[in-house]
Length: 469
Image 1 (cartoon, one colour):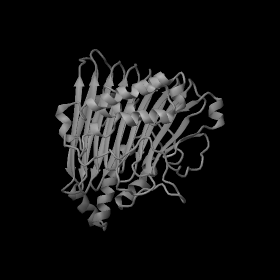
Image 2 (spheres, rainbow, N blue to C red):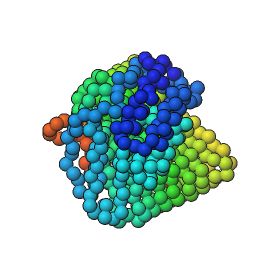
Image 3 (cartoon, rainbow, N blue to C red):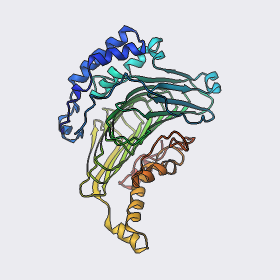
Image 4 (cartoon, rainbow, N blue to C red):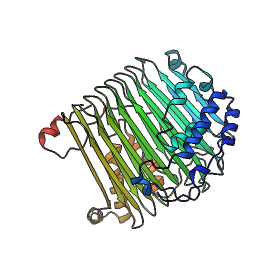
Protein backbone atom coordinates (compact mmCIF):
# COMPACT_ATOMS: atom_id res chain seq x y z
CA UNK A 1 0.00 0.00 0.00
CA UNK A 2 1.53 3.31 -1.03
CA UNK A 3 1.55 5.68 1.90
CA UNK A 4 -1.04 8.44 2.02
CA UNK A 5 -0.24 12.05 2.88
CA UNK A 6 -2.20 11.63 6.10
CA UNK A 7 -3.28 8.25 7.54
CA UNK A 8 -7.01 7.66 6.91
CA UNK A 9 -7.51 7.02 10.64
CA UNK A 10 -6.84 10.75 11.19
CA UNK A 11 -9.33 12.05 8.65
CA UNK A 12 -12.33 12.06 11.03
CA UNK A 13 -12.99 12.15 14.76
CA UNK A 14 -15.70 11.44 17.33
CA UNK A 15 -16.63 15.13 17.62
CA UNK A 16 -17.80 15.08 14.00
CA UNK A 17 -19.82 11.92 14.61
CA UNK A 18 -21.62 13.48 17.57
CA UNK A 19 -22.25 16.73 15.68
CA UNK A 20 -23.66 14.84 12.73
CA UNK A 21 -26.04 12.84 14.92
CA UNK A 22 -27.27 16.04 16.55
CA UNK A 23 -27.77 17.80 13.20
CA UNK A 24 -29.94 14.93 11.95
CA UNK A 25 -31.93 14.70 15.18
CA UNK A 26 -31.38 10.95 15.26
CA UNK A 27 -31.97 8.70 18.31
CA UNK A 28 -29.04 8.24 20.68
CA UNK A 29 -28.74 4.54 19.88
CA UNK A 30 -28.00 5.45 16.25
CA UNK A 31 -25.21 7.79 17.33
CA UNK A 32 -23.77 5.03 19.52
CA UNK A 33 -23.66 2.76 16.48
CA UNK A 34 -21.87 5.51 14.59
CA UNK A 35 -19.21 5.77 17.32
CA UNK A 36 -18.63 2.01 17.23
CA UNK A 37 -18.27 2.16 13.44
CA UNK A 38 -15.75 4.99 13.78
CA UNK A 39 -13.59 2.81 16.03
CA UNK A 40 -13.80 0.01 13.47
CA UNK A 41 -12.83 2.44 10.74
CA UNK A 42 -9.77 3.56 12.69
CA UNK A 43 -8.71 -0.02 13.42
CA UNK A 44 -9.06 -1.65 9.99
CA UNK A 45 -6.29 -1.37 7.38
CA UNK A 46 -7.04 0.25 4.04
CA UNK A 47 -6.65 -3.13 2.31
CA UNK A 48 -7.42 -6.31 4.26
CA UNK A 49 -5.44 -8.55 1.91
CA UNK A 50 -1.72 -7.86 2.46
CA UNK A 51 -0.91 -9.10 -1.06
CA UNK A 52 -2.62 -6.08 -2.59
CA UNK A 53 -1.79 -3.22 -0.22
CA UNK A 54 0.88 -1.87 -2.54
CA UNK A 55 -1.71 -1.44 -5.31
CA UNK A 56 -4.21 0.80 -3.48
CA UNK A 57 -3.30 4.25 -4.74
CA UNK A 58 -4.09 6.83 -2.05
CA UNK A 59 -0.99 8.97 -2.24
CA UNK A 60 -1.67 12.64 -1.64
CA UNK A 61 -5.06 12.15 0.01
CA UNK A 62 -5.86 14.38 3.00
CA UNK A 63 -9.53 14.65 3.94
CA UNK A 64 -9.13 16.40 7.30
CA UNK A 65 -10.59 19.61 5.88
CA UNK A 66 -13.76 17.94 4.65
CA UNK A 67 -16.85 18.38 6.80
CA UNK A 68 -19.77 15.88 6.74
CA UNK A 69 -21.91 18.22 8.90
CA UNK A 70 -21.65 21.45 6.88
CA UNK A 71 -24.59 22.60 4.75
CA UNK A 72 -24.75 24.95 1.78
CA UNK A 73 -26.97 26.27 -0.97
CA UNK A 74 -29.05 23.92 -3.13
CA UNK A 75 -28.03 23.33 -6.74
CA UNK A 76 -30.30 23.46 -9.73
CA UNK A 77 -32.61 20.45 -10.10
CA UNK A 78 -33.33 18.86 -13.49
CA UNK A 79 -36.77 18.95 -15.01
CA UNK A 80 -38.93 16.05 -13.82
CA UNK A 81 -39.37 13.06 -16.14
CA UNK A 82 -42.63 11.12 -16.38
CA UNK A 83 -42.83 8.05 -14.14
CA UNK A 84 -39.32 8.70 -12.77
CA UNK A 85 -38.30 8.87 -9.12
CA UNK A 86 -35.89 11.77 -8.68
CA UNK A 87 -33.34 12.01 -5.87
CA UNK A 88 -30.91 14.91 -5.57
CA UNK A 89 -28.17 14.96 -2.92
CA UNK A 90 -26.32 18.24 -2.59
CA UNK A 91 -25.00 20.63 0.05
CA UNK A 92 -28.53 21.48 1.20
CA UNK A 93 -29.60 17.87 1.90
CA UNK A 94 -31.69 15.42 -0.12
CA UNK A 95 -34.62 16.31 -2.33
CA UNK A 96 -36.95 13.49 -3.39
CA UNK A 97 -39.82 13.41 -5.88
CA UNK A 98 -41.99 10.31 -6.29
CA UNK A 99 -44.69 10.34 -9.00
CA UNK A 100 -48.17 9.95 -7.53
CA UNK A 101 -48.90 6.94 -9.75
CA UNK A 102 -45.92 5.02 -8.35
CA UNK A 103 -46.71 5.91 -4.75
CA UNK A 104 -50.34 4.86 -5.21
CA UNK A 105 -49.17 1.48 -6.57
CA UNK A 106 -47.20 0.85 -3.38
CA UNK A 107 -43.69 2.08 -4.07
CA UNK A 108 -42.14 3.31 -0.82
CA UNK A 109 -39.23 5.74 -0.60
CA UNK A 110 -37.80 6.98 2.70
CA UNK A 111 -34.81 9.29 3.10
CA UNK A 112 -32.51 10.22 5.97
CA UNK A 113 -33.27 11.44 8.60
CA UNK A 114 -36.81 9.99 8.46
CA UNK A 115 -35.60 6.44 7.91
CA UNK A 116 -33.57 6.62 11.15
CA UNK A 117 -36.70 7.39 13.17
CA UNK A 118 -38.94 4.66 11.70
CA UNK A 119 -39.36 0.93 12.04
CA UNK A 120 -36.91 0.23 9.18
CA UNK A 121 -33.97 1.94 10.89
CA UNK A 122 -32.34 -1.30 12.07
CA UNK A 123 -32.38 -2.82 8.58
CA UNK A 124 -31.03 0.39 7.11
CA UNK A 125 -28.21 0.70 9.63
CA UNK A 126 -27.10 -2.91 9.24
CA UNK A 127 -26.80 -2.66 5.46
CA UNK A 128 -23.14 -3.09 4.66
CA UNK A 129 -20.84 -5.00 7.01
CA UNK A 130 -18.69 -2.40 8.78
CA UNK A 131 -16.25 -5.13 9.80
CA UNK A 132 -15.64 -6.18 6.20
CA UNK A 133 -13.98 -3.04 4.87
CA UNK A 134 -12.53 0.17 6.23
CA UNK A 135 -14.53 2.50 4.04
CA UNK A 136 -17.84 0.79 4.70
CA UNK A 137 -17.12 1.48 8.38
CA UNK A 138 -16.37 5.11 7.49
CA UNK A 139 -19.75 5.39 5.79
CA UNK A 140 -21.49 3.71 8.74
CA UNK A 141 -19.98 6.29 11.07
CA UNK A 142 -20.54 9.41 8.96
CA UNK A 143 -23.32 8.90 6.41
CA UNK A 144 -25.28 12.15 6.10
CA UNK A 145 -27.59 11.20 3.23
CA UNK A 146 -29.54 8.01 2.70
CA UNK A 147 -32.35 6.30 0.80
CA UNK A 148 -34.49 3.22 1.48
CA UNK A 149 -36.39 2.13 -1.64
CA UNK A 150 -38.93 -0.70 -1.45
CA UNK A 151 -40.66 -1.94 -4.60
CA UNK A 152 -43.52 -4.39 -3.84
CA UNK A 153 -44.13 -7.69 -5.56
CA UNK A 154 -45.51 -7.68 -9.11
CA UNK A 155 -45.19 -3.91 -9.48
CA UNK A 156 -47.27 -2.99 -12.55
CA UNK A 157 -44.61 -0.90 -14.37
CA UNK A 158 -40.80 -0.80 -14.52
CA UNK A 159 -39.43 1.58 -11.88
CA UNK A 160 -36.93 4.19 -13.04
CA UNK A 161 -34.89 5.99 -10.35
CA UNK A 162 -32.59 8.91 -11.15
CA UNK A 163 -30.25 9.49 -8.18
CA UNK A 164 -27.97 12.55 -8.50
CA UNK A 165 -25.13 13.65 -6.22
CA UNK A 166 -23.79 17.14 -6.98
CA UNK A 167 -20.67 18.72 -5.42
CA UNK A 168 -20.72 22.50 -5.23
CA UNK A 169 -18.98 23.60 -1.99
CA UNK A 170 -15.33 23.57 -0.83
CA UNK A 171 -14.52 20.80 1.63
CA UNK A 172 -17.81 19.06 0.90
CA UNK A 173 -18.33 15.51 2.18
CA UNK A 174 -21.35 13.57 0.98
CA UNK A 175 -21.67 10.06 2.40
CA UNK A 176 -24.75 8.35 1.00
CA UNK A 177 -26.23 5.02 2.06
CA UNK A 178 -28.73 3.31 -0.23
CA UNK A 179 -30.84 0.24 0.52
CA UNK A 180 -32.81 -1.22 -2.40
CA UNK A 181 -35.38 -4.01 -2.26
CA UNK A 182 -36.92 -5.28 -5.48
CA UNK A 183 -40.09 -7.36 -5.08
CA UNK A 184 -41.04 -10.55 -6.87
CA UNK A 185 -41.62 -10.14 -10.65
CA UNK A 186 -40.71 -6.43 -10.42
CA UNK A 187 -38.27 -4.48 -12.55
CA UNK A 188 -36.04 -1.58 -11.39
CA UNK A 189 -33.50 0.56 -13.25
CA UNK A 190 -31.58 2.76 -10.81
CA UNK A 191 -28.97 5.27 -11.99
CA UNK A 192 -26.49 6.90 -9.61
CA UNK A 193 -24.76 9.91 -11.15
CA UNK A 194 -22.00 12.06 -9.63
CA UNK A 195 -21.12 15.52 -10.96
CA UNK A 196 -19.62 18.83 -9.83
CA UNK A 197 -20.57 22.43 -10.46
CA UNK A 198 -16.98 23.55 -11.00
CA UNK A 199 -13.59 22.10 -11.84
CA UNK A 200 -12.08 22.35 -8.37
CA UNK A 201 -8.68 21.04 -7.33
CA UNK A 202 -9.65 21.05 -3.63
CA UNK A 203 -10.17 17.61 -2.16
CA UNK A 204 -13.74 16.61 -1.42
CA UNK A 205 -15.22 13.29 -0.31
CA UNK A 206 -17.88 11.02 -1.76
CA UNK A 207 -18.81 7.74 -0.09
CA UNK A 208 -21.49 5.49 -1.57
CA UNK A 209 -22.69 2.30 0.13
CA UNK A 210 -25.41 0.28 -1.64
CA UNK A 211 -27.15 -2.84 -0.38
CA UNK A 212 -29.48 -4.51 -2.87
CA UNK A 213 -31.84 -7.42 -2.31
CA UNK A 214 -33.62 -8.78 -5.37
CA UNK A 215 -36.87 -10.73 -5.13
CA UNK A 216 -37.75 -13.91 -7.04
CA UNK A 217 -37.84 -13.54 -10.83
CA UNK A 218 -37.09 -9.82 -10.61
CA UNK A 219 -34.80 -7.68 -12.75
CA UNK A 220 -32.61 -5.00 -11.19
CA UNK A 221 -30.06 -2.79 -12.94
CA UNK A 222 -27.88 -0.39 -10.95
CA UNK A 223 -25.98 1.99 -13.23
CA UNK A 224 -23.34 4.44 -11.98
CA UNK A 225 -21.85 7.36 -13.92
CA UNK A 226 -18.91 8.82 -12.04
CA UNK A 227 -17.90 12.13 -13.69
CA UNK A 228 -16.90 14.61 -10.96
CA UNK A 229 -14.14 17.23 -10.73
CA UNK A 230 -10.46 16.16 -10.44
CA UNK A 231 -10.35 16.84 -6.69
CA UNK A 232 -12.93 14.26 -5.59
CA UNK A 233 -11.88 11.27 -3.48
CA UNK A 234 -14.51 8.52 -3.76
CA UNK A 235 -15.26 5.21 -2.07
CA UNK A 236 -17.89 2.90 -3.57
CA UNK A 237 -19.05 -0.23 -1.74
CA UNK A 238 -21.84 -2.41 -3.15
CA UNK A 239 -23.33 -5.59 -1.75
CA UNK A 240 -26.18 -7.64 -3.21
CA UNK A 241 -28.09 -10.83 -2.46
CA UNK A 242 -30.08 -12.32 -5.32
CA UNK A 243 -33.46 -14.06 -5.13
CA UNK A 244 -34.50 -17.21 -7.04
CA UNK A 245 -34.40 -16.79 -10.84
CA UNK A 246 -33.67 -13.08 -10.49
CA UNK A 247 -31.16 -11.10 -12.49
CA UNK A 248 -28.94 -8.27 -11.28
CA UNK A 249 -26.86 -5.90 -13.38
CA UNK A 250 -24.14 -3.69 -11.91
CA UNK A 251 -22.81 -1.16 -14.43
CA UNK A 252 -20.10 1.28 -13.33
CA UNK A 253 -18.49 3.92 -15.58
CA UNK A 254 -15.71 6.04 -14.09
CA UNK A 255 -14.70 9.19 -15.95
CA UNK A 256 -13.27 11.55 -13.33
CA UNK A 257 -12.07 12.22 -9.81
CA UNK A 258 -8.71 12.15 -8.05
CA UNK A 259 -8.77 8.79 -6.25
CA UNK A 260 -11.56 6.24 -6.62
CA UNK A 261 -11.95 2.99 -4.71
CA UNK A 262 -14.64 0.57 -5.93
CA UNK A 263 -15.66 -2.63 -4.11
CA UNK A 264 -18.50 -4.83 -5.37
CA UNK A 265 -19.70 -8.03 -3.66
CA UNK A 266 -22.53 -10.15 -5.12
CA UNK A 267 -23.97 -13.26 -3.51
CA UNK A 268 -25.82 -15.52 -5.94
CA UNK A 269 -27.78 -16.94 -3.03
CA UNK A 270 -30.64 -18.70 -4.79
CA UNK A 271 -31.01 -21.15 -7.68
CA UNK A 272 -31.45 -19.71 -11.15
CA UNK A 273 -30.12 -16.25 -10.30
CA UNK A 274 -27.55 -14.35 -12.32
CA UNK A 275 -25.39 -11.25 -12.13
CA UNK A 276 -23.61 -9.11 -14.71
CA UNK A 277 -20.92 -6.83 -13.22
CA UNK A 278 -19.60 -4.45 -15.89
CA UNK A 279 -17.06 -1.65 -15.42
CA UNK A 280 -15.50 0.91 -17.75
CA UNK A 281 -12.78 3.34 -16.67
CA UNK A 282 -11.20 6.35 -18.34
CA UNK A 283 -8.23 7.72 -16.42
CA UNK A 284 -6.21 10.81 -17.23
CA UNK A 285 -4.03 13.33 -15.40
CA UNK A 286 -3.01 11.91 -12.01
CA UNK A 287 -6.26 10.02 -11.39
CA UNK A 288 -6.11 6.58 -9.78
CA UNK A 289 -8.74 3.83 -9.68
CA UNK A 290 -8.71 0.77 -7.44
CA UNK A 291 -11.40 -1.84 -8.26
CA UNK A 292 -12.35 -5.10 -6.60
CA UNK A 293 -15.23 -7.31 -7.78
CA UNK A 294 -16.39 -10.55 -6.17
CA UNK A 295 -19.20 -12.86 -7.26
CA UNK A 296 -19.99 -15.98 -5.21
CA UNK A 297 -22.00 -18.87 -6.61
CA UNK A 298 -23.73 -20.29 -3.53
CA UNK A 299 -26.48 -22.26 -5.28
CA UNK A 300 -27.04 -24.40 -8.35
CA UNK A 301 -27.89 -23.08 -11.81
CA UNK A 302 -26.36 -19.63 -11.28
CA UNK A 303 -24.61 -17.49 -13.87
CA UNK A 304 -22.21 -14.66 -13.19
CA UNK A 305 -19.85 -12.54 -15.20
CA UNK A 306 -17.58 -9.60 -14.46
CA UNK A 307 -16.00 -7.59 -17.29
CA UNK A 308 -13.70 -4.63 -16.61
CA UNK A 309 -11.95 -2.49 -19.19
CA UNK A 310 -9.90 0.60 -18.42
CA UNK A 311 -8.06 3.14 -20.55
CA UNK A 312 -5.27 5.13 -18.91
CA UNK A 313 -3.27 8.09 -20.20
CA UNK A 314 -0.92 10.75 -18.78
CA UNK A 315 0.12 9.64 -15.25
CA UNK A 316 -3.12 7.87 -14.34
CA UNK A 317 -3.19 4.53 -12.54
CA UNK A 318 -5.56 1.60 -12.33
CA UNK A 319 -5.83 -1.64 -10.40
CA UNK A 320 -8.48 -4.23 -11.20
CA UNK A 321 -8.97 -7.34 -9.07
CA UNK A 322 -11.70 -9.91 -9.43
CA UNK A 323 -12.78 -13.07 -7.63
CA UNK A 324 -15.28 -15.62 -8.92
CA UNK A 325 -16.00 -18.10 -6.14
CA UNK A 326 -17.89 -21.37 -6.65
CA UNK A 327 -18.98 -23.04 -3.41
CA UNK A 328 -18.67 -26.81 -2.75
CA UNK A 329 -21.28 -29.12 -4.30
CA UNK A 330 -22.83 -26.42 -6.47
CA UNK A 331 -23.51 -27.44 -10.06
CA UNK A 332 -24.77 -26.07 -13.37
CA UNK A 333 -22.71 -22.95 -12.78
CA UNK A 334 -21.39 -20.62 -15.49
CA UNK A 335 -18.80 -18.05 -14.39
CA UNK A 336 -16.67 -15.63 -16.40
CA UNK A 337 -14.13 -12.99 -15.34
CA UNK A 338 -12.40 -10.55 -17.69
CA UNK A 339 -10.04 -7.68 -16.82
CA UNK A 340 -8.18 -5.68 -19.45
CA UNK A 341 -6.29 -2.39 -19.46
CA UNK A 342 -5.06 -0.18 -22.31
CA UNK A 343 -2.20 2.27 -21.79
CA UNK A 344 -2.06 5.42 -23.92
CA UNK A 345 1.17 6.83 -22.46
CA UNK A 346 4.47 5.52 -21.16
CA UNK A 347 3.78 6.99 -17.71
CA UNK A 348 0.34 5.39 -17.24
CA UNK A 349 0.09 2.16 -15.28
CA UNK A 350 -2.42 -0.64 -14.76
CA UNK A 351 -2.45 -3.96 -12.91
CA UNK A 352 -5.01 -6.74 -13.23
CA UNK A 353 -5.38 -9.76 -10.94
CA UNK A 354 -8.26 -12.13 -11.81
CA UNK A 355 -8.88 -15.09 -9.48
CA UNK A 356 -11.07 -18.17 -9.67
CA UNK A 357 -11.84 -20.16 -6.53
CA UNK A 358 -13.56 -23.36 -7.68
CA UNK A 359 -14.51 -25.57 -4.74
CA UNK A 360 -16.94 -27.76 -6.64
CA UNK A 361 -16.11 -30.74 -8.86
CA UNK A 362 -19.63 -30.87 -10.29
CA UNK A 363 -20.95 -29.45 -13.58
CA UNK A 364 -19.08 -26.13 -13.60
CA UNK A 365 -17.87 -23.89 -16.41
CA UNK A 366 -15.50 -21.12 -15.34
CA UNK A 367 -12.87 -19.09 -17.14
CA UNK A 368 -11.04 -15.79 -16.97
CA UNK A 369 -8.92 -13.51 -19.15
CA UNK A 370 -6.59 -10.63 -18.41
CA UNK A 371 -4.20 -8.28 -20.20
CA UNK A 372 -2.49 -4.91 -19.89
CA UNK A 373 -0.84 -3.46 -22.98
CA UNK A 374 -0.23 -0.26 -24.94
CA UNK A 375 -2.55 0.54 -27.79
CA UNK A 376 -1.97 -1.66 -30.84
CA UNK A 377 0.14 0.46 -33.19
CA UNK A 378 -0.71 -1.77 -36.15
CA UNK A 379 -4.36 -0.83 -35.75
CA UNK A 380 -3.41 2.84 -35.51
CA UNK A 381 -1.30 2.54 -38.68
CA UNK A 382 -4.13 0.77 -40.51
CA UNK A 383 -6.55 3.61 -39.75
CA UNK A 384 -3.93 6.20 -40.69
CA UNK A 385 -3.50 4.44 -44.03
CA UNK A 386 -7.21 5.09 -44.61
CA UNK A 387 -6.72 8.83 -44.16
CA UNK A 388 -7.55 9.09 -40.43
CA UNK A 389 -5.25 11.23 -38.29
CA UNK A 390 -3.34 9.52 -35.48
CA UNK A 391 -5.26 11.24 -32.68
CA UNK A 392 -8.62 10.30 -34.20
CA UNK A 393 -7.42 6.75 -34.87
CA UNK A 394 -6.36 6.38 -31.22
CA UNK A 395 -9.69 7.65 -30.06
CA UNK A 396 -11.64 5.27 -32.31
CA UNK A 397 -9.69 2.28 -31.00
CA UNK A 398 -10.16 3.46 -27.41
CA UNK A 399 -13.91 3.87 -27.80
CA UNK A 400 -14.18 0.45 -29.39
CA UNK A 401 -12.22 -1.05 -26.50
CA UNK A 402 -14.66 0.40 -23.94
CA UNK A 403 -17.70 -0.38 -26.09
CA UNK A 404 -17.00 -4.08 -25.62
CA UNK A 405 -18.36 -3.56 -22.10
CA UNK A 406 -20.99 -0.89 -22.72
CA UNK A 407 -22.64 -2.89 -25.50
CA UNK A 408 -23.13 -5.79 -23.07
CA UNK A 409 -24.92 -3.67 -20.47
CA UNK A 410 -28.65 -4.43 -20.05
CA UNK A 411 -29.45 -0.75 -20.71
CA UNK A 412 -30.72 0.31 -24.12
CA UNK A 413 -28.23 2.45 -26.07
CA UNK A 414 -25.85 2.98 -23.15
CA UNK A 415 -22.81 3.62 -25.35
CA UNK A 416 -24.54 6.47 -27.18
CA UNK A 417 -25.87 7.90 -23.91
CA UNK A 418 -22.39 8.05 -22.38
CA UNK A 419 -20.68 9.34 -25.52
CA UNK A 420 -20.95 13.06 -24.52
CA UNK A 421 -19.14 12.34 -21.25
CA UNK A 422 -16.42 10.32 -22.97
CA UNK A 423 -16.05 13.04 -25.61
CA UNK A 424 -15.63 15.73 -22.95
CA UNK A 425 -13.04 13.76 -21.02
CA UNK A 426 -11.09 12.88 -24.17
CA UNK A 427 -10.87 16.55 -25.14
CA UNK A 428 -9.98 17.71 -21.63
CA UNK A 429 -13.28 19.46 -20.95
CA UNK A 430 -14.89 19.25 -17.51
CA UNK A 431 -18.34 17.71 -17.17
CA UNK A 432 -20.11 20.39 -15.15
CA UNK A 433 -23.52 20.72 -13.52
CA UNK A 434 -24.23 24.30 -14.58
CA UNK A 435 -26.69 26.89 -13.26
CA UNK A 436 -28.35 27.12 -16.67
CA UNK A 437 -28.48 25.37 -20.01
CA UNK A 438 -28.40 21.59 -20.63
CA UNK A 439 -27.47 19.32 -17.73
CA UNK A 440 -25.27 16.22 -18.10
CA UNK A 441 -27.71 13.82 -16.38
CA UNK A 442 -28.92 10.73 -18.21
CA UNK A 443 -32.15 10.79 -20.25
CA UNK A 444 -34.91 8.17 -19.79
CA UNK A 445 -33.52 4.63 -19.75
CA UNK A 446 -34.91 1.15 -20.25
CA UNK A 447 -33.78 -2.39 -19.53
CA UNK A 448 -33.04 -4.60 -22.51
CA UNK A 449 -32.34 -8.33 -22.70
CA UNK A 450 -29.50 -9.87 -20.72
CA UNK A 451 -26.55 -11.02 -22.82
CA UNK A 452 -24.70 -14.29 -22.99
CA UNK A 453 -22.34 -14.97 -20.11
CA UNK A 454 -18.72 -14.87 -21.09
CA UNK A 455 -16.52 -14.68 -24.13
CA UNK A 456 -15.79 -18.41 -24.17
CA UNK A 457 -12.50 -19.56 -25.66
CA UNK A 458 -13.21 -23.26 -25.27
CA UNK A 459 -14.54 -25.96 -27.52
CA UNK A 460 -17.78 -25.71 -29.48
CA UNK A 461 -19.73 -27.80 -27.02
CA UNK A 462 -18.99 -25.46 -24.13
CA UNK A 463 -19.62 -22.42 -26.31
CA UNK A 464 -23.06 -23.75 -27.25
CA UNK A 465 -23.98 -24.75 -23.70
CA UNK A 466 -22.89 -21.55 -22.00
CA UNK A 467 -26.55 -20.53 -22.27
CA UNK A 468 -28.37 -17.30 -21.84
CA UNK A 469 -29.53 -15.97 -18.51
